[in-house]
Length: 292
Ligand code: ADP
Ligand code: MG
Image (cartoon, rainbow, N blue to C red; front, side, top):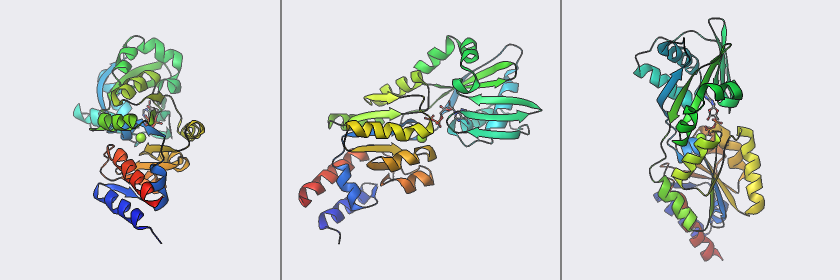
């Protein structure tokens, strides 16, 4: 049978937009020592916007947008959708047909267009050296503003880049501060580059961050964190986050997250409000005191 204190915590949580999937998770929340956050869609709104672009000499700006958007139209990554939206805002609405589209999770996309192979994604996916020599100087500046750079390349090398800016969630800063002040260790885990991660994590106020993390590596980072801290939570929204949500002592999903994240998690923030995490911890501590 469920204890009255547990029932009270569950109903109090529901009123505040926190869905607990069971009593044991509430107890765990009250014991938390560390919290790891995913970046895109968790600390940020997950709706990046194209702010800058640059194409190589001889490449027409509209041509680069058309090619990139035609390929990204077949991916549902937030960066891909943002580039499609950007194309439409520039009145580019007729896309080219794409063959052999390959979506490589954590890296980017590859596709054949008019018989030519295109690679779109992060630096390490298109070739570190070429990416550096093309974007040298400007990429550092853009990344220090917390922008993500998407590189586009064909067989002749880098054809151009897009810079995209995502905004941190309203309340994110206050929510993280509450957790820091409560003595928790807070960190961000992202697949994004070192410089971009550094900028976003300092905007959010988390104590530490791990960048360039492949989707399958998130689980290992949670396990490592668990060696230092006995009770660890992971907060995420994506399919990529599901294994880490399952590995953490408490998996917390954003309400607008993917179905897989919602199913795998122990707690759901129904209104996507990060400040509810500190509320949930308070409720849990109160319940733990009553039960003991
Ligand atoms: P995150 O959600 O932390 O950005 P992901 O694992 O989804 O991490 O992606 C890691 C990186 O791979 C992105 O920051 C981006 O640079 C690149 N990437 C992944 N998918 C795409 C895509 N469809 N188009 C462009 N870049 C992509
Ligand atoms: Mg995410």
